[in-house]
Length: 209
Image (cartoon, rainbow, N blue to C red):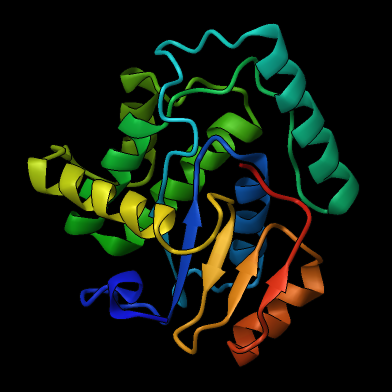
């Protein structure tokens, strides 16, 4: 894996590219939490549908797509708790807030990231709403966090890494320091093997595009 993807400032051996509004990414994040692997895997938020409106106003076609994806996650992994939210929200605000929180406290930023995923995929909340995000920030134990221009540039860097990483704009993606790649949700056991070895490249069927 080239240095532009690894990132010189990365403190974790694995990178997880995912969007907060992708149900497959939520499922992969839940698996990582269950495996207590969050310290081993650094989440880098991307926006695979950057032009979604705020507040969310999904079209019937987008609603059907979201319904199909949630149904697919349920079929693939019955152990993952997930519900169908009213709409798929824009995730730019939430992603930038998590990036800013990481600058303040990495541990609490990880907690915030999971709280945001669950707010959408368990409770159907609008994570593009600043009031919702502010509440989740407080629950994560973070004091006031101001998103800076540097935080926004960092998020743009994550986006570029993902777009130019040869992933065909698919998520979730986990990349190991040894160059292995795990694309899509895949089978639960495959994730565990990948986190142990870092060399198995695999292409799962469950993914957002």
